Every structure is written in C-alpha cells, then in structure tokens.
Image (cartoon, rainbow, N blue to C red; front, side):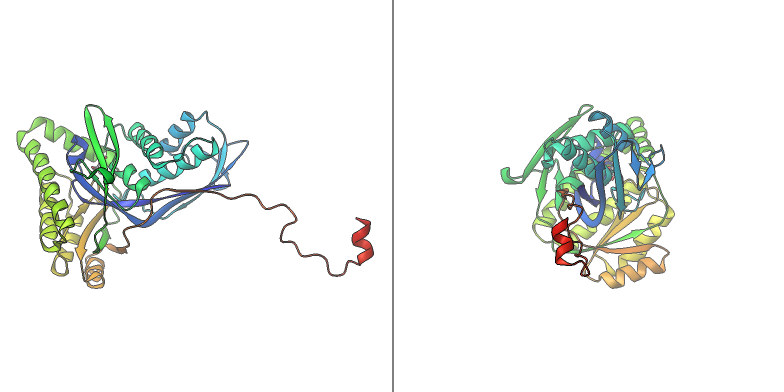
Length: 334
Ligand code: MEV
C-alpha cells in the first residue's frame, strides 16, 4: 500500500498578483490531505466505484498522464475545500506522489510540484504554481522574491508568465485562520481579477502595488518586524477588496481580528473562504473570530511537505496467535 500526504497552505501576501508573475509568500499548515492507494481492477474511492463526483478533474488528469492504471484509494481530507487553504493543490500533490510511486517514477519534490501544477492548471484553466509548490515543499515558499542560491527550489513557466520559487525560514509567529464557511471556487475569482486588470489601468496598477508590498513583506519576515508585516497584510487586504475579491463576511472577520492582531487579510482567492491574522494573542484572536461568526483555526506552520511511504502487506499469518489448545502432535502433523 502507498500512503501519500500533503499539506494545505495560506497566503501571507501576494495572492492574485502572483498569477501575473508578481511576488507572493505562502506557508504550509498542519491540515493535510492523505491518500492510501492500492492497485486494483477498477477505480474505487473510499470503497465505492469511482464516479465523476468522487474523482476530481485533478485526479483524472494525473491518472490519464500515467496510463489510467486502476487503483483503489482511501482519502483522509483535513483541508476544508473551497476555502482558500489549497485543498485541491494538496489533493493533486498527494495523488501525483502516490501514482508516481506506484508507477516507479521519481517522487522528488520538483517532479511532483511540476505535475501537480499541470493537473491544477488543467482543472482550473488558469492560476499560478503557488499552492501546489507550497503543498509539495511544505515550510515557507516565496515566488519571484530575490533568493539566495541555497534557497532556490524550481522555476516554472506557463502562458507567458514565469515563477522562480524558493524556500524561506518560517517565522516564529502565530497565525490564526478564520473560515467564513462560504465556499468559493478559485477559477471564477481569478477570472474576475483578470478581466478587471485587462480592462482598467487602475486595476493593473493595484496588482503591481500588491507585488511591491509583498517584497516589503519579505523584508519584514527576514527582519522579524511583525508590526510592519501586520500593517502590510492589512493594506494588502484593502487592495484585494478594491480588486473585488473580498466580501462582507471576510471584511467582518478581518475587522474582528484587528484589535488583538498585528494585521489581517483574506487569504487565497477570496469571495468567501478564509482570512488570516498575524497575532501573538492567538486565543483572543480566535475568540474574536468565533464571536464574529467565523470558525477559527490556530494553525501550526513549519510543517513538512509531500510525504510518500510504501507499507508492505503483512504475510497472512503474521501476528496471529497460535491456538494454545493445539497439541505438539497436531502441529507436527501440519
Ligand atoms: C489561490 O490560493 C491563489 C490565487 O492567487 C490563484 C493562484 O495563484 O493560482 C488567487
């Protein structure tokens, strides 16, 4: 049996702008998507024959890329879907890791990050490699932020945009995520921003400004300047609101978190989903988010990325106790 698990993520700064090759920062979190996979005669998900509802387009794309070998999978999904926490990226990373391992292909992080991004792009028809790279690498990742040679991970190009992806040391800070409970798929929100940016110089400049802010945010992280990082995050939220991807529920959770936080913003594609607050009073911030109608998660960061393990099947009689009533003579006659 193959077991593959990959984490969700949140975006510290730079979502949407990253689609156009602008800088972004993301951290993997302790909510994971785990798949257990066995080769089978037909496709099965959680014990039932796979249908369009149980096989996501990402899984179908990855299966087809590897000759559609039928498999039986069990899914343990701890990343809330449609909430900006990278659930489809974690699914793509874990599924790609498991299928590649089954096909005896390399499961190094770069190969899986590339494949998971292709699956995500094919399913959504748009987007950056931020979520998939964060899930595969774990820890903290920066896109198109100047990096040292040791921190460079991989370079990805798509549709005229390119991203240099590097790792960074995860800050020793607490983040609290607040979920509005409103599910909002990424594709239409990315499309909304694309249209606005194409049609308006004002929106184009907002996207540029988010990119610049994110570079400043990286300086705050390396300098442990949480006051300034929080202020930049809050300003980033305002700019995302101007781009039209916030909503009243997100704004109210952000507002509720502010008195006990350095700063707060929506995270991911917006339109619902989650916000994130940078705080050193996580319990108070979580209580404020709950009081405002959200579901808070005090998340752990600095978590590992994709992990793929193979568990050998135990021989049928291993671990079975011998029948104590059997006599020596019975045993020797077997
Ligand atoms: C979604 O988590 C982040 C977006 O920037 C889309 C993407 O980068 O693909 C909105």
